Figure (cartoon, rainbow, N blue to C red):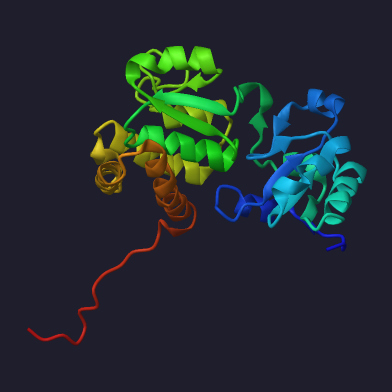
Amino acid sequence: MSGYKSISPKTLMRLIGTPACPVLIDVCIDPDVAEDPRLIPSARRHPHSDILNLASGLAGKQVVIICQKGKKLSAGAAALLRTKGIDAILLEGGNFAWRDAELPLVPVAHIPGSRWVTRHRPKIDRIACPWLIRRFVDPQAEFLFVPPADVDDVAEKYGATAFDMPDGDWSHEGANCSFDTMLARFALDIPALHSLAKVVRAADTDQHELSPQAAGLLAISVGLSRQWKDDLEQLEHAMPLYDALYRWARDGQDETHDWPMHGTTA
């Protein structure tokens, strides 16, 4: 595939947060990042001069290359990847166009790393947070589930960031749960995520009056934890649940259903 292709910020934003999202690679040079140290949600940085070293891991995937203005750096990197058969396109207008459209940007300084650790046997917050990270911050993030007493030591020994711990930095704050904390830290001011956060908070803190969906999320979450004894298997099978909740929050909150009673007889 050798043709020049691009995607608009608006179209890309519709894909971010869904399983259909392309791989986003930001090839901005260091001075450009220093000028505005933020990334488009789920993007990862990689030097434009080393872009071909990513080719083997991108086979069969669509890739969006991002630079500051959507010109020479992204065009060249995408063209190089296309020589290796990668479906690489570029973001129209680059980070500048994204910023000018007032779309969300994640502060680089608030991304602690790709390895996270929390208590084992997750139910709600400890599944919702990994979903959020993988869909909007770091698709390659890995999650360690360990006994509660070992979380801090594992974080120190293995360079992981502890989350959803009573005395941790990435945890509940006041009435908000860890999912809320992550939304704020990652600057993900997205209406659908705020709606989803309300459901997660209500289910995670036993305040079902906050959201009619909370009881359902709790029931399904408990069921998943009973069905899958391995926490990583549980996380993988729960990802589609949160994908669906996000699409409901984004596109389907006004849809209702009822049994058609017209024309029935007793």
